[in-house]
Length: 112
Image (cartoon, rainbow, N blue to C red):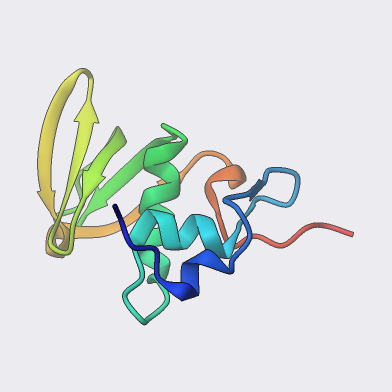
């Protein structure tokens, strides 16, 4: 039987407030595990883009850019799907990643 830490058992169930484009604290804990520290902005962004299968544009430090979908990532690399082929891109080679839609931004606040 799996032990559920007290810190998780008292929290609300996983929720994604789609209208406000915010991810609940429990969803973040489920996605990244309890590490004692909150997930980084980078982890939340990449996980949201991966989960939503959002199309992103990856810009490399060399100036090359390409459209892709995030398949997975870890501390050092991102696996992307480019036209049906998977590519491993090391994070230190990435200048920035952009999305075409604001819905991928898990940190956006609701508009009044």
